[in-house]
Amino acid sequence: MVRKRSQSLWLDMKRIPAMEENAYLTALIAGSFYMVASARLLRLSMRTRELPELMLSVYFAATGLYYLIAYSPNYPGFEPLSPFANIAINWIFVLGVFPFLLFIRRVFRPESAWALALVWICGLCLVAGGIDATRKGGLEEVIENPWFIVEWFGYAAPAVWIGCEAALSYRGASKRAEIGLCEPGVVNRYLILAWFGCFQTLACLAGLYWAYDNGDNRAISVFADALLGGCEIASVGTLWLAFFPPAIYRKWILERSAGIGPAPEG
Image 1 (tube, helix red, strand yellow):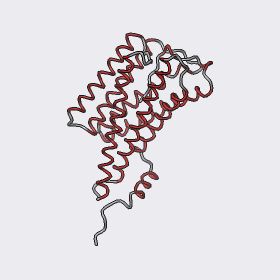
Image 2 (cartoon, rainbow, N blue to C red):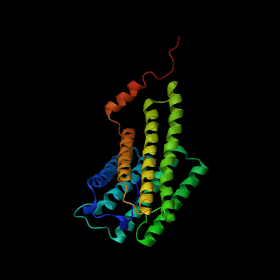
Image 3 (tube, rainbow, N blue to C red):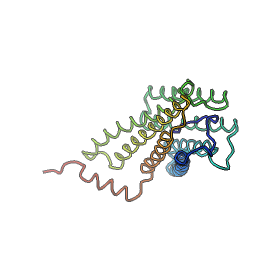
């Protein structure tokens, strides 16, 4: 889940050390990964006509666009974003989280009232943060800004939610696989989604640390930037294995699970 940064807090590229430049480059790579994954998921949804793939595709596209556009002023030859562009890209990300929330509910808790309530709570938090950012001309990413924390909860909670749901589903699917009632590929997909949730949660925590670092008037944390970008790349990589596993990976899963199944009779 992407971490937001205020336009007013960006640094001039000439004052960014090599390590920090690499951290920003990692974020741009993550954005590119998201866009490619979004395109692949969109093609998959058009073929299967299933909503979950389309929901993830929209979320990935919004996140990828945010990375590619919001980080662009840090590099030579790029001008700072205008207030309108800064607000617009913030809303693209905010609205992009909604299909991610709906994806989690549809896949794991389609009939649950509390899951629907959580979707509404997170959605309201995202909109509230977006309105505050619009009013100020950009989201002020510091701990002292309560609306930043409200919006942060709106996109951090889904990351924790999908990780927990996938872990619970993986546990149940593993038990069913032991008696031959669940395919190894399905079990592995739940495991991958659980890892995806873990990486997304770590990315959100990195963003929270970055906001704390700025709120305390210290230099931007290179570690937080690198952790953020690395977790986002890992997130896309794990989901790539879930939806587009290469043949060698599918073969490895089958070989690994060859010993799992109902005990032979006699």
